[in-house]
Length: 92
Ligand code: FES
Image (cartoon, rainbow, N blue to C red; front, side, top):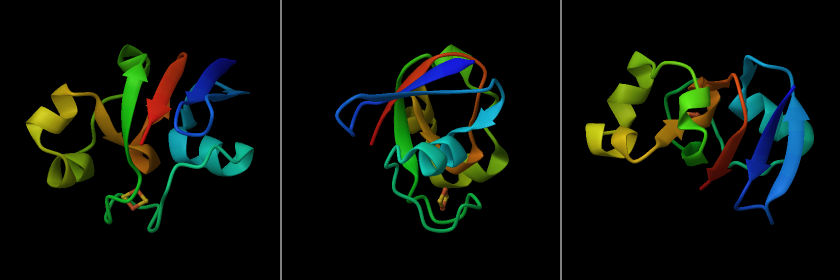
């Protein structure tokens, strides 16, 4: 299991299996990450991986359409397109 800390939601901490989708974890556990489409199109779920970016999977082409390289370098991801393989802390 991995730990996800929702910094913008009073640092709520939940656990989930490895390879979980970050937005799905947020929905299941009431983490509070904003979302609309769930499909990598709207950008609403843009969030910053404050800790544990190395524990996220590869950036998807859909994310590159919405996030600049500077965004990505700053740890931004789309939660609906991001899978976690280890502990992460996320803000938005
Ligand atoms: S919810 Fe629309 S891009 Fe993630």
